[in-house]
Image (cartoon, rainbow, N blue to C red; front, side, top):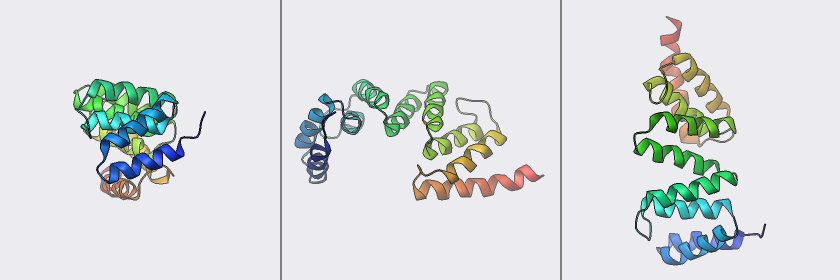
Length: 161
């Protein structure tokens, strides 16, 4: 696969400067070459209407293509699109897919689902397992790790009773 790093850097800089048209063209070039990051970024532009009209169906198509090329972020966004559609069971399955690939952010989202009974039956023990995995993951932001730690502290006293 061709190296698309330069296209990505140009696109990121263009987007940061508000030139979404130029960013989109760079992402489209990278996407045509099969680059997962470009596919994801282009999907995001369609998802939120950044520099072009919002198109959730096109965003979903691009996210799925990026997921097949290894983009965990795309799988998380697919789950979010399903949540927006009210399709909670499918949303939970998508979080499960990316969690199985080692993503701590997805483990945190699964814990929230287990606690709320969103797309899955309520299960505090399963939520506890997900939170512990999330906290130990390399693939989670510091904010998310802190959120998971806070949730874990809140759950622990309940589970001891």
